[in-house]
Length: 167
Image (cartoon, rainbow, N blue to C red; front, side, top):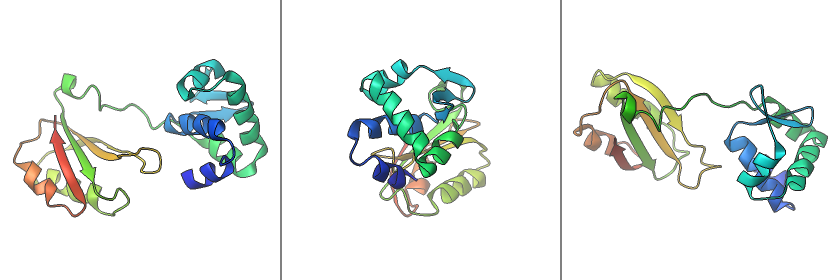
């Protein structure tokens, strides 16, 4: 999806920054306005985050609405929901952050989940950064309890895993 969006904005780097901000935050466009689910977001707020002027945001919205493919993408995008990543420690949940060699390699999430399941640890949430949007994407698993340190070695044996951090 990102490659299609980037291609449409290749001659407009500032508008591309706006589009990236919208996608990264799960913001959609309805009736010429930007929304987070049902909450309208002012163009000024988007311009500040994307580091562009407000008119660029307005022009980006118009460009998206005029392109059938972009219009479908941005009309239907939604936020992924509440992330426990930043508050897991406060809730006494375990956090595993996995860095990978190739974020598009299959099986890393499945094998990580299997290792936790074999230890009787339930996964409460899995967050996978999109490799097309994040320069160094990670897999973050939030578990029902703290993760034993000895699992690091098991996780590092997964093909494609380069680094494992426990919090």
